Amino acid sequence: MATIAIFSTYRPSEGFGGPARTYHQRIALERAGHRVIHVVVESNPDKAPMRSHDLVELCERPFRQQIDHIYGDLDLSRRAAADRRLVRRVTDHLRAERVDVIILEQPFLVDIVAEAIKSVPASVVYSCQNIEYRLRRDLERFQFVLDRPTDRADEVRQLERRAVELAANVTTICPTDQVAMRAEFGCDSVIVPNGTTVATAGGPIAPHIDGPVDFAFAGSSYWPNLEGFAMIAHPSLAFLPPIARIHVIGSACNDLLAVPAMRKWYSINASRLSLRGFLPMDELISTMRAARAVLVPVFIGEGSNLKSADALAAGVPVIMTRRATRGYEDVLEHDDEGVTVVDDAASFRLAMAAAYEAPRPTARVGVHRAANLSWSSRLAPLVTVIDGL
Image 1 (tube, rainbow, N blue to C red):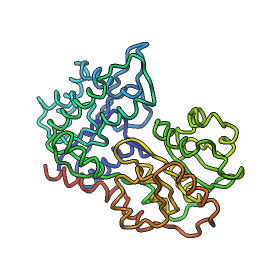
Image 2: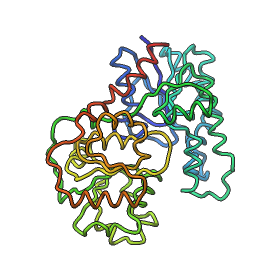
Image 3: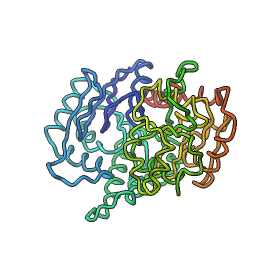
Image 4: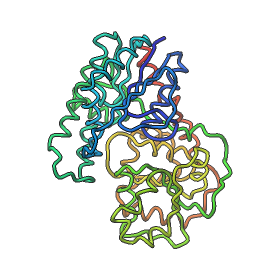
């Protein structure tokens, strides 16, 4: 069995997004008999726990350097690759741990990996979670930086091409990314889709929640999440009665009402929101299962959204955009019970209004769908890729 190093710019954790995916990759690979270590290069100290054989390198930005959040990972990659001591520490760690395979999550640490494998005979698997340069171009309109160079997205594309050329195998996260990867970089890839912890949660969880849960929306303060919610709330949430409550979970709570489109009708919007912040997984699942519907208002972005998997496995109705279904087409083809897919914000609002007027669900829906969304089944192709090296 192989010793595998997973490279990322964030620490693994059981919660949400990329950290959850790397966490469950480790679980799946270790269950298959492999040994896994994490190599994390981060720009800000993180409190997520790490294991003794993992390696965390902090590569802070220079004091008072302007922060370009959209290209923060790109800036981190340049600083880290230029830090010869950091590169040497990473290489020495891989050698000491006798690493056979490197899984490169996203392309940003590719230069460190390329340097390391000059003296560590490890095969590289490039785990593509987005076509990153396309995503950055989409996001530029959310944060205008006056003196941002116009070729920053092209720099990201160069890293992606380098990752593809370095890799023995490439994985993508959904069929549309598989097609795009072939068109952009001329390479084939194996689809390794997202899953969710919600799929393997126990039976009904008794909610400990004050007040009604009409809708649940879970997400980070990532711009597409905030923008997507603001789009369905435009011009305001007054299309719902004053007693209706949308429970918002995650770091989106910190910034949602500060979005200009939400702030314009602050009182109306705030009165219909219950901002819950970060919740333990059991409380998150309780909230979703107590809702009339879980909302996934994703209108832009690349890749496949993990919050879509959480919603589809929750056992209650789901209202989601067609964009949010990306990566879950196979699951929905097998079981689309209770799922309403819309193409625009106006249709999303109409679906919410209809869900509010309908009787609350009395039985779980999409049970077969949930069974197909466990991390173990969704990550099985990755285990096959590693076993084949």
